[in-house]
Amino acid sequence: MRACASATPDFLAIGHAARDLTPDGWRWGGTVTYAALLARAWGVSAAVLTSLAAADESRYQEFLGSDVLLHALRSPTTTTFENVYTAAGRRQRLHAQAARLEPRHVPQSWGSAPIVLVGPLLSEVSTQFSGFFAQDTLVGMAIQGRLRSHRRGSIYARRWRRAPQEFAAYDVLFFSEEDVQGSAALAESYAALVPLAVMTRGGAGATLFAHGRVTQHPAFASRPVDMTGAGDVFAAAFLLHYAENRDPAAACRYANAAAACSIEHAGASGIPTREQVDTRLRSTQR
Image (cartoon, rainbow, N blue to C red; front, side):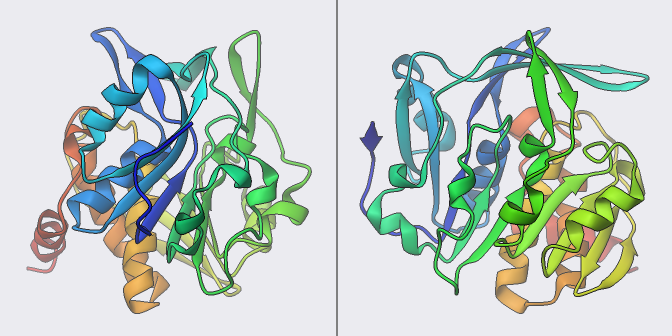
């Protein structure tokens, strides 16, 4: 295990960084990757708690940038996915999975980070992170990794039976319409456990569940190139904006604009700055 710094970050992302296999080779992915890069692009001090093979630590640090704090649990392998997009939706395969992350792996100085996003890819993050952080910390969870499992590398959707015990300790939940298999009832059941929840709906925008009220927020016009990471950018943008103004509707609109910017480029190359998001917002108000 390696801790790169003892400073307390303003934004902490927890989960597996992943090697995403593409026809053109592999590239870095995972919720923590997109989230930390967005925070960095917005001038927020960011940190990642993840698990990597020793040979990948320096590569991943270089990809994130030297100003992003990295704490990597040593693992025999790095999590590796293959995403295949078809007319019927996305199909995924798991080729390798890194070591499990536990609360004891969080560096002591990082436990007081004011904003935290827990983003498991495939249940690699312990359920004990639920309630681990201080009460005044804004803690969100991208729950996709709880809503799927795998059999011989083939990933499939599932219901998370321990949702009431785990999710209720979070401030915000993020999931996609695909994650709940289009079930409004299932989406509502997860959302009812927390003060805020957002279901992203691709080109249809996002559904915001805020303190018992449900509102729809349309997507921004864009020219999609790669949808990978859009939900992760959305989650990070929502948390960062909400932490500033505590207006969930405004945070949802801002996150929609950030996601629209991100999908116009391949992989993490489209992480938008705040200025780019502001420009997208202004362009729709003319």
